[in-house]
Each structure stands twice: as structure tokens, then as C-alpha cells.
Image (cartoon, rainbow, N blue to C red; front, side, top):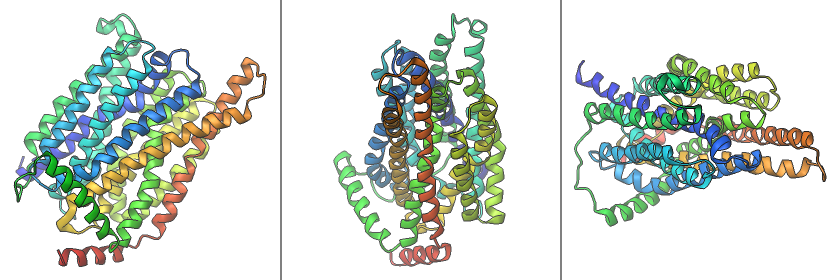
Length: 446
């Protein structure tokens, strides 16, 4: 394997590594275990709100750190080292979930938030390596390759974890709850182990200047954030795209993080929801690569529009489902577009920014991406709680509590459509050619 191909595969394998956390923990077992084990006896809408707020708080912390992380990413040769720091923070926090006992929902949220910080922080440096790994003619494919491997790797480990919970005795475990706790340990080993390939195979340029000290990095990060923000005023296309991305990717991430919790609120069995997640993973593996090819042939912007339109339809349909077969069909449709919209957004952005400032601008991109995951889960939780209070009769029967609780959950997921509509509308006004011209102008004066 030549060095260029080795670098590409080393970069893409980090998606294979960290997707175990995104799939088994964030999308799969954590919402189920949180609702049924760590929040045992808590009202379903309240546990949804607790999970949503936990996601939002963790995302807020990462978003506030992102300007500093983006500045450090510009130092080139420290990117992999800092990816390592955040990745293994996430690995440690994931393993620590094994130690949380039944009913300890606050501790579970705290550790989970630490895992999200590690996961999301590492992505800042992972994405900033993309322009150095692939040229413009390859960037759509390489970005899609990363997401594709992520779906496959995350799906394979998730399948093993599902078998562990369904047949715990085959693994020498006493029950499903113990199997879930050990599943968190397998995620930490998978994530930590495969990250080694990224560290050894990905090459990056040497730093052009000595790295700043801790205090200097903070000051530099804040200064660079302000500088980037000033520059974006001259890059109106970048600013408009980031605003559009902020809204529509929030809808995507909210569905990823909250879909299982929503299904539980509607009364679906956890095994049904796990099967739906497996469908997303294994459909998403070839679909992410296919969407990358669609973007190359049809146009990246048009492909993103298609994905947003499908997400709007899926979300509206999701408010009406009552049968597990409908949930499986929804999972299949989401699998067809989820990786595509993420991969093409990342590569599309690379075409709108100054080529000599890519790391700095990717840091800003990731900052807004992390801010985006604050709105959706909190919106879903708040709408669900308010809807239940409005709809529930004064002296409800047990059946009315169940019915109106599920209806409130449907209102909560339906509110996410607003994010896709706003994002799609803003993206309509993004002009590719104007963006390229603005980026070339700014590259020329720096």
C-alpha cells in the first residue's frame, strides 16, 4: 500500500473506530439503558428531557471549547496528538459507564457527557486533517469513505453487542443488563484500539512555529476566533452556508441521538429499536459511498437538498407511526441519506473556504456543528413536556396518561421539522461560484 493510500485509509479508519461510540452508546444502548435502568421509575417525558438536556450541555461545552481547539489545529503537527487526547478521554468515559449502578441517572449523564466531549472534541481535529489527506478531486469520495466505514464498523460491533444482550449466557453473562454494561467496555476497547491506525498511518505537515503554552493557546484561540469571524463578513457565502448547516445538521443529529428514546416513549420494545438501528448501519455503509458518487455526478448542493427534503418527510411520517414495521422502513430511509448529508456537507464546505486557512475554518465549522446539537434535543424535550401539560386532563386515567404522553412525544419529534425547513431555505441562497471567488480573494491577500 503506497503512502498516500495508507494515509487515506488511516484517516478513514478513525470513523470506523469512533462510530462504535456513536452507534452502540449514543444512538443505541445509552438511551435504552438510561430510560429503563438508570432512570428507573421516572416519567418517560421527564427522562426524555433529562437525556435531551444532557446532550445539549455536553454539546455546549464542546462548542465553547471549539475556538481554542480550532486555533491549536492550525498548528499542524499537534492535530494527531490532540485527537489522541480527546479520543482517549471518550474511551475512558465510555468504560466508566460500566460502573454506574441502577437509578444513578445523574452520574450516568455526567459520564456520558464526558464521553460526548471526548468524541466531539476529537472530531474537530479529525475533520481538520481532511484537506491534507485528500485533494479537491478526491475529497467527496474520501469524506464519504470515512462515513461509510463508520457505518460498517459501528454496525459490526453493535451487532455483536446486540447478540450479547439477547444471548448473554453465550458470553458467560448472567443477564441482559450486565451484557449492556459490558457492551460499553467493548466500545472503549474498539475505539481505543482502532485509533492506533490513525495515529501511525496518517501523516501531517510539521508545525511552522512552536506550539504555544497553555495560556498562550487559549488567548490565541480566542484571538483567532475573532479573526475568523471578521473574515467571514467578507465571505458571505461561507457565513450563509454555515448558518444553513447549523440548522439542518441539528435536525440530523437530534434524530440520531433521540430516535431510540422516541421509540421507547411510543411503547416500542427495545429489541425492535435495536433492529432498526442495525438497519440504519448496514444500509448506511453502501449508501454513504453512493451518495458521494451522486454528489460528484449530480452536484453536491443538489444532493444535500435531496437529503433535507427526505428528512422532512421522514420526520413528519415519524409523528404518525404506530407499528414496528413502519419504524423499520423509516430506519431504511434514514440509512440511505444520513451518511450522505454528513459527508457531502463536510466536503462541500471545503470548496467555499480559503485553501491556505482550511484548519482554522474547519475548527469554526465544527464549533457551529457542536452548537447545532444544543437546539434540537432541548427543543424536543421542551415541546414534549409542554405538550403533555397542555393536553393531559386534570384527573387523567392511566390510559389517558399513556395516550397523551405518546402524543406529546410525537409533538416533540415533529418540532424538528422546523430545523430542516430553515436550513434548507438558507441553503437555497448559497451560491457556489460566488463562494469560490470570495475564498480565492481572501487567499490572495493572506
